[in-house]
Length: 272
Image 1 (cartoon, helix red, strand yellow):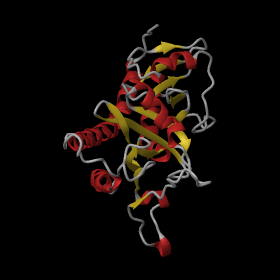
Image 2 (cartoon, one colour):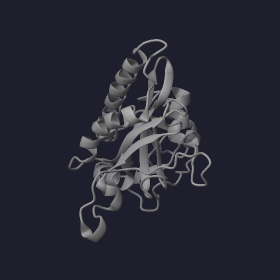
Image 3 (cartoon, one colour):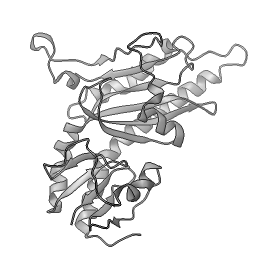
């Protein structure tokens, strides 16, 4: 059921969406480039068609993501392409993922400024350090829904060792999902940008993802990454979990109001 909310709350939700939307557009643009590239590979012939390889694709991915990772003030801290198992002929399991210098808090050895670098991922399934990325939320949900997904906040032990939001979207060629393209955003960086906006509500206010996990809050007791436990919240967020775009606000039994932030899958919770 939709409810009437004050225009300031709706305005704040739109401003949150306007902060996230450019990151979505960035990821969608990368997807389009990779799909065009892979479609060209698939159209290279029939029996002698060129098989997609990591060796050929990795430089393309690096050229796509590097400029934004190195841009001053960028929200993103990691980005790249993750291949569907077995899709690349020379790399059955493959992550082409690059990290910005902010992953080492801006400095490297002896205080030298950190630079863009590639994630060193274990791709041998027989290794004890190997991790099947197809079991992770940022892979499973886009694979199931066929659409973009925002995962987190979660502690990303694979890339950042810090609270992170990961945005991923499927890359398709020849009618099949060939992998995902995506990016990581530090939650601390998002908080810096979004908290001043959220505070304009003038009341206890928390930004949550589609699972009810806290991204940012004006209440210091609401810890980043923790579940916001309010009666009826999970049910109100269900459409966001299924990638159903909704602009309707709703009210929980305890009086809190839920305001979706565009199609970001985030929602503003204004407590009574």
